Image (cartoon, rainbow, N blue to C red; front, side):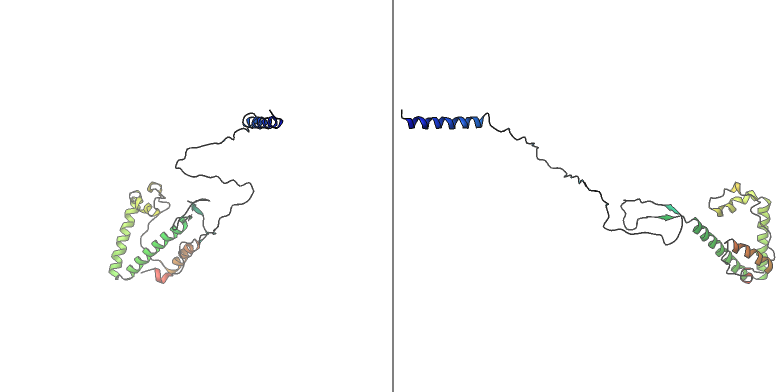
Length: 205
């Protein structure tokens, strides 16, 4: 066997040995992979902010009521979703409601005064006699009629708590200008009247 043939056979054997070592002992470790079955479902993602900062809205507005008052109801809070027409703030309107009721009573009294002004002398006497009779009935048995008086308080005062020391009815009497002015000044000082009337426009007969 020639020398060159032996050298070639040796090289072939050496290459075969290197290939075998590469495929066995020197083979790199397999790469681990995770697999999952494909299926339909929601896509979720989490955004993590690694930097400190302040989150600002794109649009903002300052809201304030058109009148001062005490907040009675606040149905929405920071971050709440609202739509056009939703109630955002309710103020306590107890004082305004009381003023409305007072104005309504003043209107009723004004209408009654106007009606009396249209009466003849005989009609006015009959009207006053009927009022005086009603006064006598109420004062004789106040408890019997207390619920009618308490009804004007809209439930704030039960009839059994209404005492005659607080309410007293009297007969129709002459209301001269001096007595009127003293009473009217007292009412104006306590906000019970706007003070725009006088004896001549309110007192009849």
